[in-house]
Each structure stands twice: as C-alpha cells, then as structure tokens.
Length: 216
Length: 177
Image (cartoon, rainbow over all chains, first blue to last red; front, side, top):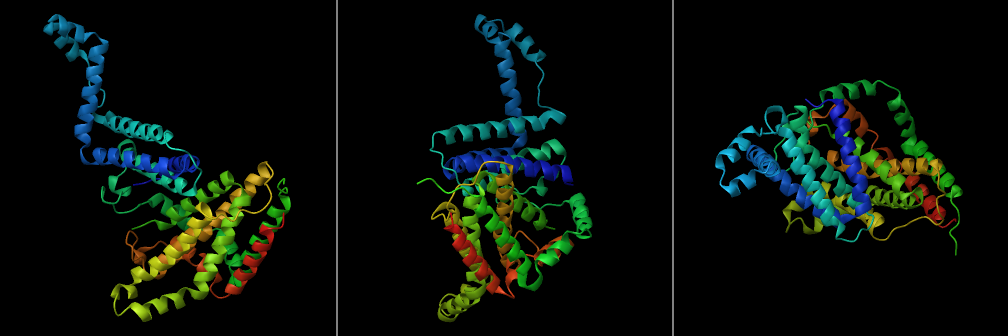
C-alpha cells in the first residue's frame, strides 16, 4: 500500500529530476532515459542475479583491499581462501535493496555524465523527460526500500501494474472534497468561467505592469 | 483502480515549478497560446473532426474511433503547447524584476498553464472514456469526478467568448512593455 509519505517522496524525486531536466534540455535527458531504462530492465528482470553480482563485486574489491591478490600471486591459496571466507556479503536479506539502489544511482550518474557531452538548452520537454527519469529511478528502488508492491509503480512494457493504489491519499482526498476548495472552484467556474477569466486577466495585467521595459 | 487525480495534481504543481524557473514573462506567452488552442478546439474541434470523418471515414474506418477523436484533441493541443514552449515562443516584452513577488507570479502563472494543459488533456481523455488505456473511467474516485467538473473545456464550453476576450487582452499585453 502506498502511503502519503511515499507519494510525497515520489513527487519530490520527480520534481527534482524535472528541474534538473529543465536545465539540461531534451537530448541529455534522452540519454539518461535510455541508460536508466536499460538499468531498470536489468533490475526488474533479474534482481537476484544482480544482487549476486554486486555481492561478488564487493567481495572481490575487499579481497584486493586485504591484499588477497598478493597471496594468490605468491601461491598462498590457504591465506587467500581464509580472507575470502571472512568477508561477509553486504547485500543480504533486508539490505538487498541497497544493491539495486546503487545500480540505479550509478546509472543515473552515468546518464548525467554522458549528458554533459551534449550541449545544454533549457527546455520544458527536458523537464518532462526528467520527471520520467525520476519516476523510473523511484520505481526501481522504492518497492525494495519501502515494502511497496512493485505493481503500484508500473513501467509500460517492463513492469505490469495495477496503477497507483493510494488508500491513505484517497481518504485524504475524499476528506478534501468536504473542504472549502470546491466552493472556490464552483465560484470560479460560474457563468461560463467569467470569474476565472477575470482573475487571469487581472493577474496578467498586474504581471505586465510589474515588468521593466527591455533595454534597446 | 487508477488515481489519475494525483497524477494530475503533481503535473500541475510541476508546471508551477517550471513557471518559477522560466519567469512569468515567458509563461504568460504560453498562457496566451493555451487560451488560443483551447478556443480553437472548443469552437472548431468538433467541426474539424466531423469534416475529417465525413470525407475520409469510408477509406479509413479508424477515423470514427474514440481513440482517434481523443488523440486528435490531445495531439492538436499538445502540439500548440510544444510550439509555444519549444519553438516559436511568444514571450511578453519586458523583463520580470527579480524577487519573491516575481517568483510567486511565476508560480501562479505556471500553475494556470498546468491547469490548462493537464486539464485539457484529461478532459478529452475522459470525454472519450480513456481510449488510450491505463485508466478505468468507470472507477474514478469522487475527487476525480469532482475535479473533472472544473477542467478548462468543461468550464469554458458554455461561453467560449470569454476566452476570446482573454486572448485579445493577453495579445495586447504581450506588446505593452
């Protein structure tokens, strides 16, 4: 079940990526999208295998740090095997999700770095792609970290879903209908939207009045 | 069960953020184009669709499908929005002064743009019973059903003339400074 906090976290991640996407423009975001989708597909289709690889990578690195390679080079297999046994797998049980977070964050960073090779041009559609990137990133690891059902955050063609099931949010929304906001909306939409049109007109006049003339 | 209203609210809020970043002088240009596109769809959308269906439906039967009708409205509207953001931008003359008030104005104008854009798309998808899938139109929450009553095409449909007045005012304001 998705709680309001997860929805806020999801919206926050998407908003941050949206702003970054706006600043970077369309093409860098397309590159990030491709990289993230590739990483997401791997995370989605074979998570256990990926976790195994990440554990292996960690153990390999630790073996190097603990000079296990020197032992192997010197032919001291017993010492190397002992060092290998001592190293514990980091991504087990409750911590498996962190391996996937690392993979997705790495993919996001790689996408970002590749995007640096392309010229930036601010774009709203970059923002839209950024939002999408934020969603894919969240869809990959939020279920692992929050106990969320994976089908709550579907990605077409890769992950089937039932759509967002936000029971708490639904209850909050139902409660919100009883608040005064609908009254304001009803008032704004009276007479074919005349109050709304007047409000937008006044806002536009005020906004333009505040502007400074452009220097010639 | 689909929570389309949450998605809609998030999109509108994100347009608000975009409004702060882009400043309101640019965002008002998008508002102008949104109003023009909405007016076009309200006044001529059905007629254009009917002409297309009358002339070509014999050869292309998919023209009479709800999927095409919804796609027509959504694509035309989003095309205008795309052009107004990305291509020929109708930025208002003058510079927005720096400061909190300008950011607030950017936020409000961005939210209005979000309301126009996300609202219009939602309305036409709803009108044709979500032919693109993903949402079950018969299972909308009360909140969603209520919001649909206040989406731009529904609000302005009875009196599109108000939109014409607003469009003229925005066009005059665009060259004021």
